Figure 1 (cartoon, rainbow, N blue to C red):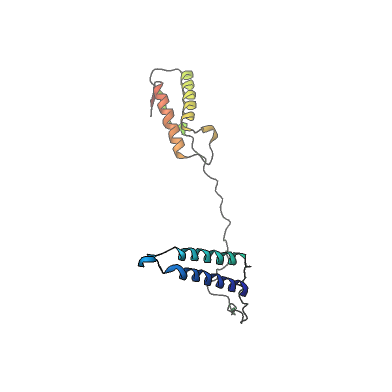
Figure 2 (cartoon, rainbow, N blue to C red; figure 1 turned 90 degrees about the horizontal axis):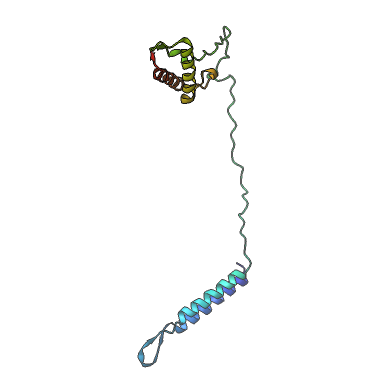
Length: 175
């Protein structure tokens, strides 16, 4: 705070305290205590004056003092004449690694064996089998014609059960 603003704020505080003290303890006529609200009025006027002076004065800025001391100590890493004991030896392969191809996925429709119970002809059996494979593919979400690496065992199992249920419903005995 500037010296001028400090003096003005101090003057406003003195005026407000003076106004408050002058009316804080007054005895009225007849020996009855009379409080005219001078303390509250004086305090409000004084605080308002002090707030106005402080808001109109220019702000002061405080900057930290620069540090003029020795720099921090930085230690260099230790120097060894020999490599550390825990270093790993170089990797040497005695033979070339063998690359094995991944196994081919097993198609689930070959697991279901259906025997005709009502003397169905070979063409009837082929038609029933094709219809059941389409229905099982729609039910399980697995298509044996498009097997990929993301095909799960749950899909193939669901497909096999769906074909078995369909063939059994069409009059076949399922193994």
